Image 1 (cartoon, rainbow over the protein chains, first blue to last red):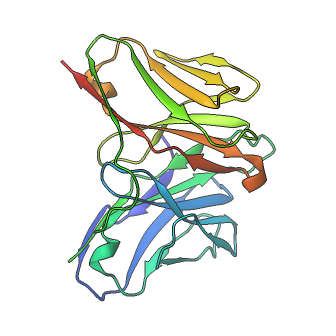
Image 2 (tube, chains in turn blue, green):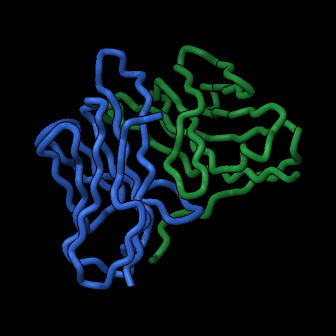
Image 3 (cartoon, rainbow over the protein chains, first blue to last red):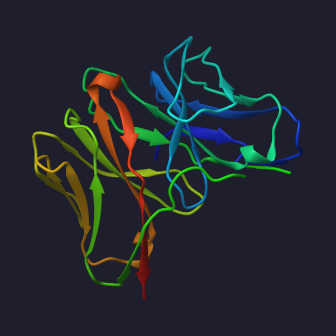
Length: 115
Length: 113
């Protein structure tokens, strides 16, 4: 089982609130990712990081922001939540060691509902 | 919220039958491929992988076939069980994109008892 954790698992919040979704991994992986996924739909990469102080926007535009101050921690923040942000958010990590055929591990996800 | 993207195709199979899930990948430079299984309410989990210098790899009850000529990947599940019901995603590793994994759209597998 992968050592990658997301909190909270479920969050229901009102419009306009600021929220932070937490993601932590204890595997020492350099690469971390955030995906957005609606029920029964495909995965969309919204942010990624190749290491401390590295953050990049993904393939799908998102109003969220991320930070990577520590290797193990990659939080995602929404400054002002809206109903359109309702979705499942999946965090993942991957080693970038010499054998780059490395498995990407996923967290359990945070299901966000904005009322 | 507003859904973005495609609704996933569904494959329905009878318990005990073999399942074949297909995936077309996009980049001829992809050098590594992974199949993931995602059960309802959970994150995707690794099933099996294959490098581009192989055309077949077998695991426990699963086989992945790679056809680089037509950029096609398939996952075969033998003797499908109700616990196999999930969404299955293929992913390709593209070196020129910093070894970032690019995920396919996914297929919903429903196993009928």
